[in-house]
Structures are given as C-alpha cells and as structure tokens.
Amino acid sequence: MTVPWHTVVLLTGDKDFVPLVDRLIELGRHVVVPRMPPPVATAAELVTAASAAPLLSDLLAEGVQDDYAGVPVLIASAAASTSGGNDLRGTITRWLPGETSGFITDSGSRSWFVSRDSLPAGDTSLPKGTRVRFHGRPEPKPGKRYPEAFSVRVLM
Image 1 (spheres, rainbow, N blue to C red):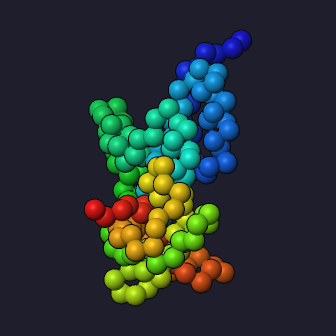
Image 2: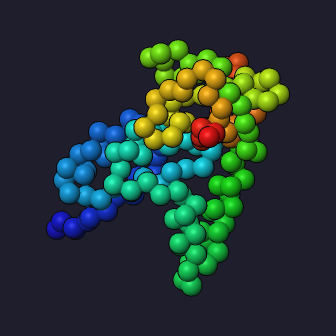
Image 3: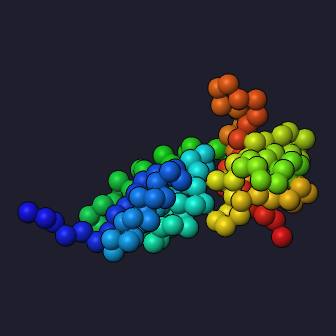
C-alpha cells in the first residue's frame, strides 16, 4: 500500500542535498528546509532550492501549542545555547574571485574564516572592504588555524 505524502521536511544544511530537493519538487512535493542557527549553517544553495526555508526557531515557536507545550521550548533553548556567541562585526579582508571562502577581520583585528555557505542566499562572495556582522565559533576546529564565521550579513 502506498501512503500519499505532500510535504518533506529535510533537516540538513548540506548543499549536497540540492539534487534530492530538486527531484522531490519535480515529483510535486513541497520541501521544507528549516534554516539552522549558527554554528550549524544552512547552505544558501539548499535554501534557494527548497519550497520553503523558515528559521528553525520560527517553526519551534509555532509548535508551542497546547498539546506540545514544553518540548519545542526545550529544543529551541538547546539550539540557542549553541549559537556560537555574540553578534560580531568586521570587514571582509580577503576573498579572491572564484574562491568559495574568504576572511573577515573583526574589530579586535582577529581573522575569521568564512565560507560562501554562510553568506545570505544568492551571494557567492563579498568584495574586500565590505562591512559585515556575523556569529562565530571562537575556537578553530581541530586541525584548523582560524575560527569560523557563520550567518554573515552585509551592513548597510
């Protein structure tokens, strides 16, 4: 027996799932990809491919209803506690044409690695000198030299 289904919720931030999302949409399915809080970045390509990409916190907030009181709040609190720290500000100091990553220097002169997957949807790089705000993991990943920036937004 086949069970009809119309919506798929894909809990990942990996752009490798874009072909799956494309195929599901071709099959007439609605694909929801909740955008995760930092330090878990959701790839811009995945957000663009999805039918909808609401913030995970917004989905959890909607889930706080009579029958589910407490469970989403607990999950939302856990997600918030891993957000990677304060709202930081800095300047793009290196991003060569065609590269998939670059560097931000914060106001304290610390360099941060940034991937294009951490940029707003549609952006694949930022010009040197662009002022940004971001979140970050202050300690570099094992084997890495620089801390990593997430959720990068251009300051106007």
